[in-house]
Length: 69
Image (cartoon, rainbow, N blue to C red; front, side, top):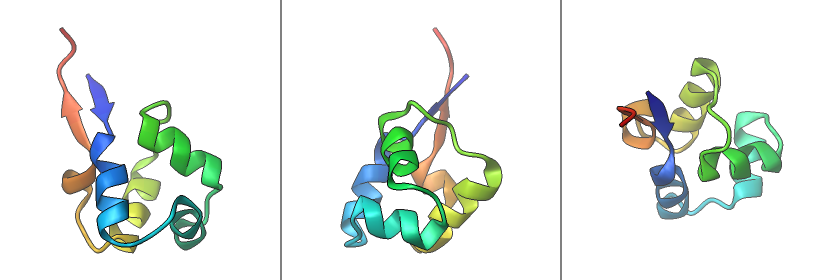
């Protein structure tokens, strides 16, 4: 299974945050947010929860599992 994070960018923008602002709110680098948005980095459960909390949403809203073909 792969973690799909494409909605992170959409949710972040809808919340009115830049990548830098979200990084500061969650205590990670902007590069981590960029990599997560691109799907190059799967965040830990702890980071996923911090991101969701910072964006006032749920982990399920941002991250979903996709079955490998």
